[in-house]
Image 1 (cartoon, one colour):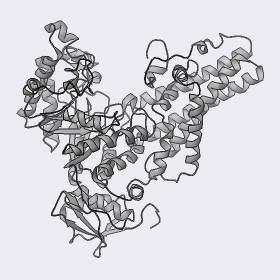
Image 2: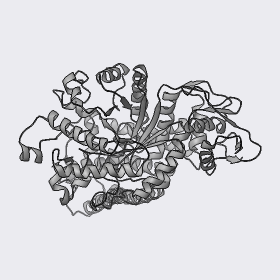
Image 3: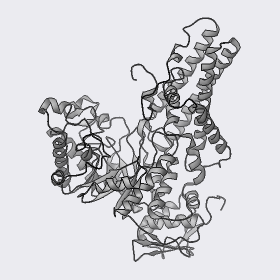
Image 4: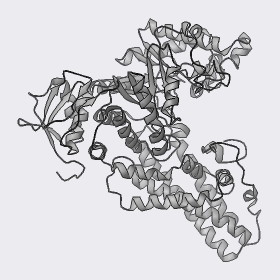
Amino acid sequence: MKNKRYKKEIIWNRDDTPRELHFMLEELGRHYPISCAKVSNVLFRRSSEPSAVNPVSNNVIEFSTVPEAARGLSYILGGCKAAPLQKRSFEKTGAMLDCSRNAVPAVEYLKHWIRRLAMFGMDTFYLYLEDMYELEGEPFFGLQRGRYSAAEIREVDRYALDFGIELIPCIQTLGHMEQALRWECYYKISDAKNILLAGEDKTYDLIEKMVRFWTENVNTRRLHIGMDEAGNIGHGHYLKKNGFRPQKDIFIDHLNRVCSICLKYDRQPIIWSDMLFRITSPTGDYYDHKAGFSEPLFARLPENLQMVYWDYYHSDDKFCSEMIASHKGCRQLLVSPGIWSWGKPWYGREFTENNLPPLVKAARTHGIKEIFFTLWNDDGACGDLESSWCGIAMAADQVMGGESLPERFAAICGGDYELSRRLAGINDEFSAFGLLWDDPLYGLYWKKRRALDKTYWNKRLIAYEKVLQELKSAPPGYGAGDLQHLRRLTEFLAEKICLRQQLETIIENPGKAQMKKLELAFRRQAVRAKGLNASFRKIWLSRFKPFGLEVVQLRLATQAERNLETARRLKEISEGKGVGLLELSGPDLNCETYPDFTFRGNVSPSTII
């Protein structure tokens, strides 16, 4: 074999291999050195004890599910001679992919995810879909956002089933519905701009269409109906129509009515649990474990309800344990740590590695049966989703145990595990995107960060230089993130720091020669912004439907134009005319724990675009 990522080729025999593995092996054979022949070098043996699987021993893969067999393949491909007995702490393990924040994965890209998830041993795959699926008689639902057709969903579901993976729709039936509610035809069923109107019959007509769609197009009975972060429930049109009612009563009545629709269609409803804490906590905080579930509250909840405790923020397993305990009475609790794919251009190693293991540990201690890891796409899906495989690999081993992770990661993803971790040095919380979207003249994010730490941007410049050094020795054909794009982005950010520092210096000591030099540098930065835009486009169209790309293109076009505007101003100043650079005069101020890194928060201090 020419490819160094694989240490061994796998040959299987059709007659000696359980039929349920044939499709998986044939599909993986299209992407990995796995082939079928009369003489094999691997055998598959069903485990008599599903809770304890030895994935590889003397080229015998022991399995109780298709993903366990696929995980065993990764040991052989990675050259791992043997693997220790693995006791399953959880009955089900999976991941959730955000398909609603501009980036809608193409069907083939979802299949790519299914293959890799199976090879990491995961058996559930949640798709987060707000209005991203077609509903009969609802032409504005997901209009021109890349919504999935029924045929597309059935194709993905069938593919997942053949890999032993349960495809679970994760929709919204209360909050996070702003994309649909923007249309006037839904005005009568809106409470707030992002919240459906509880108690309104037409609201439940729409929700019934949602439930019917998923009943008809996926095999699972389970349906995640969302219901998170609806803090303004009852405070908008509901208040005008019905007068004041406690949010707790409105929410629970709505929940029961939606669950009754699920029961009608024989669906098993799942919700995020946060609203049940927010409506009982004096502070409205989810992570107020002292609020918990009172017996009277729990008695009002539907009997057929599962809940998900999600937590991406806490690094103390004792706190996580207390939160799990505060769900007392919940008939079946799932937990959901985060693999930080949002707010960062690269996999969020620090937040993931600090906060995911404690929740896994607490869940294991409490005997939780199911866990899944969320990957969000907040603020327009601008991060490199493929880099998150590094976090998925770590999460899978946290749950299932295992050895030789770097070798298996290389075999499955075609990447260097430790390099992927080091490249996360570009992030530092959310500052990379904060700097990327920051206006070169106003410098809103620049000033917020400097108000907290006067040396902050010098530190970030050093970090970017380290990332660029790492990228110089990176191997070609990387399969766990686009390194060429990362290099372009890092160069752009490093240059942006240097240009801002030079701009502030030259205004204090202006000189024609220096002005001209800096003017040309800003013009080159505008060209870099266009190159970055082209790089984003290439990645996007190789993974996602084209819908939503325009958002990133418009943002980077803004960067190009504002760099040109800065160059024009410098030229005018050197010629003794123009209005100067008045935007630079604002003070270094910050009033936020985590300075807003979003495009909307930094593109302009004027009317929001």
